[in-house]
Amino acid sequence: MILFWGGADQPAKKERSIKAFTSLQDLMPFFEQRKIAVISVNVQEDPAAVIEEIVTQSKSAVPMYIDSGKTLYGDLGIFVMPALLLIDKDGKVVTGMGYSHDIIDRLKGECEILLGEKNREQVEEALRPKVVDKSPEEKSALRFVGMAQVLIKRGQNDGAIREYQEAIKVYPAIGGDAYIELGCLYLDIGNFDEADKMLEKGLKMTPGSLRGQICSARILAQDNVQDGISELESLLLRKSQSPDIHYVLGTFYEKLPNVDKAAKEYRKAYELLERQSSME
Image (cartoon, one colour):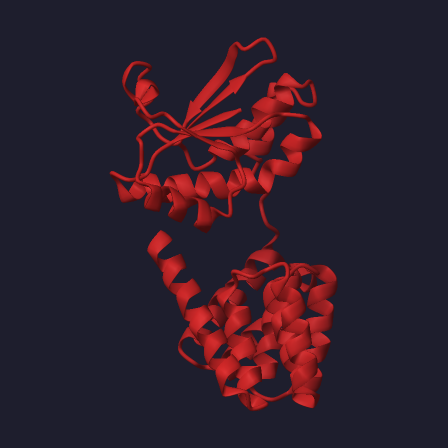
């Protein structure tokens, strides 16, 4: 599989290249298991600083080549970037695709078809799943959740708590996120017992919730700040680019007090937020 990319002349190309490399990196276990070689080719002779920026932000380890003569860009007409080509074991181009919001998902699907793991119908169904109509109870619960989110933005946490309580009452199977948000709200108003109960329920339903894990660490820190720090440092091993973790870790260090470490974490949170906003 070859990714053709470039990003120096247009911000949109740079952003798309970062997204493509990030998604490819996430898919590397999929390619490695199937012995699919993956390389990338920069077709615009981008400056080293631009290439380094894209590779750094995407954390890409995909082997890279430079089309120094712009042969692909000019002679072969590779104008839409990023673009992907799938090449079989005999060196023949099997399929190619230009940039779209689902380019990586389509690439994965084409690989599965070529390897006989899925047929085209299955891949298309996965790319465009059928919309399942929600029950009246679920729709009602989602309206409560929507109002809760509005109230949170207004700083009306007590009202938001009531809305989440109604959502869960109407539709208990609403999902772990609602319980987690309710738990975090209880935590914000100092009701630690209810916060702990809701977070425990929510994390059982959605164990990978970063927000739930951060709020759980905040509860731990109420009794022992160092326990909260240890929990967040463990999370950072998997989610080092989360500004929320760095910010809350900063508040923990501030309580110790360790002003230097707190400032370092606050600064890191700010830098990550700035980077995220520049990519939106």
